[in-house]
Length: 233
Ligand SMILES: *C/C=C(C)/C=C/C=C(C)/C=C/C1=C(C)CCCC1(C)C
Image (tube, rainbow, N blue to C red; front, side, top):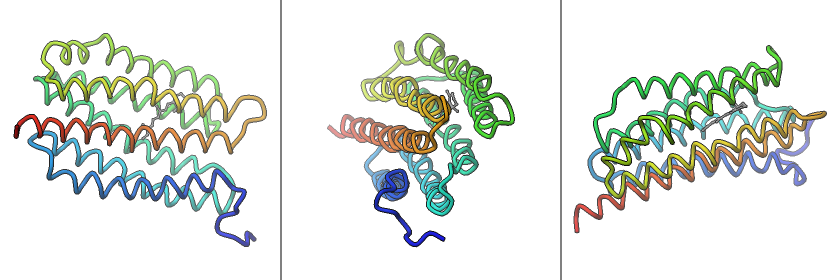
């Protein structure tokens, strides 16, 4: 039986604790700051708070699994992602609809691709299917999303109709989907290459969640509050 709740040498465990607290704090922050935003930006901040709130709940459980068993909390992690990634797609869509009328087909394409990405990632991680076969399919789905955001319909809408604040938010979205999301496949590769490393896998995924949920939320918050400033001045 484990004698301590958190071993001083368990850095992965520490990262689970840190992220749980950070997700909780970010949730309160985004909800409270909602008052400072105007119009549609209020909804964007609510969605940012839902993302970190749902993640916080799952982090409490993931942390427990890690501390008690020392193994990857794969199921809780993917349950969390299956809820929060679609919410982030909704967030992308909200940013776009703040700019212009957007066809809902675009929304469904992004949503479908993100679900394919996650479902194959999950089956790869639990070894229901080949780890690297799953990786390739998941990567293709992710690349499709990048394509849509950089060269597809979404990019044209932002370029042609965007305001300063919405363009800022849309650019942040692009960086999140390419640079921020790239941390996840990196974690997968580090976690499963050679003998594999559960420590690496979890620390990298935890870092990725911090960047993509909290830092992304902060960028949305910055855009939301800067556009309210534009309106009042
Ligand atoms: C809040 C959680 C987020 C934004 C999770 C995003 C997850 C990904 C972008 C995962 C991507 C993966 C690949 C592109 C290939 C390997 C398998 C995954 C699922 C880790």
